[in-house]
Length: 191
Ligand code: SF4
Image (tube, protein in one colour):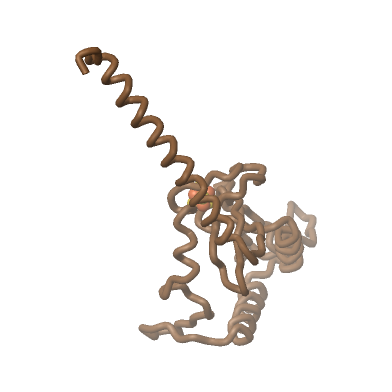
């Protein structure tokens, strides 16, 4: 015992602690790997994007038996490369939130409350409103000096796309905007 110096005692204990911690680390890693494997059993993967802001960071959604079980950053996404900010990291909670609006809501003029309506009803109302606004604000021609040109447009309607829209959706939005006759086709990320 007298041969043990303070330095050698410290070395021994530090080494022992290192071995113990290393062993613990391996055990922990194995446990995590087992958990991860269990969690992903029978799971389907879909790519999607965060719906909170205009960055549109990529996400991977894991779905098991028709239910979303996990959402995380998509490492293959060209822009975000797997990273998510705190809002994006918390997005899973919104999926099962009781406050999530899942049906169209309508508040009648003068009313103080919203009521649920069907999707068919909502689409019909929106279509009628668009037609009404378009007709009321239609500009068929414009004059420059004595010359009158056909312009056929409305400046009362604008289309706003978002970073979450796919190329295909943007293609349809742009077509729809031009069909309606609005020159205002924009994207949220440009603002
Ligand atoms: S993860 Fe954050 S930065 Fe990315 S889209 Fe969502 S809210 Fe925006």
